[in-house]
Length: 163
Image (cartoon, rainbow, N blue to C red):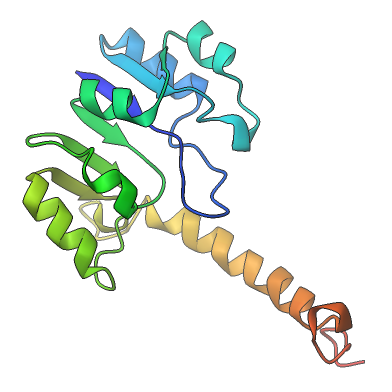
């Protein structure tokens, strides 16, 4: 299987869907991994780290989508990516479909097989892919809330403790 990893283009999204260690595992299992040039830059991962782990570097997202049987992303595709999806391609990412009818229609039109991280369940009904993201969001909420209280962010200028 050819697994494609495009660069995330959503505003302020600096994560990448796979690390070089993940690439190594997939390549050792017989898969081909194609990573878009610069896909890991926001996470501090250089293209050379991916190639050292067995990945091929593609010049752009168009090439990644065209070659891949499965696309692995962090966030849902944006409108500029809809036309890159192709029939019988698997898309593995956080999809968050409920508030996004345009994405739903694009997925249906392309006939891609979408697998949403947030819906993957174990037999005990736990959500192993959603849990760590929820933990991060929960911890970040305190930090973001504190920043919003600062005067230079148009907050009231008080500390979390109320002083």
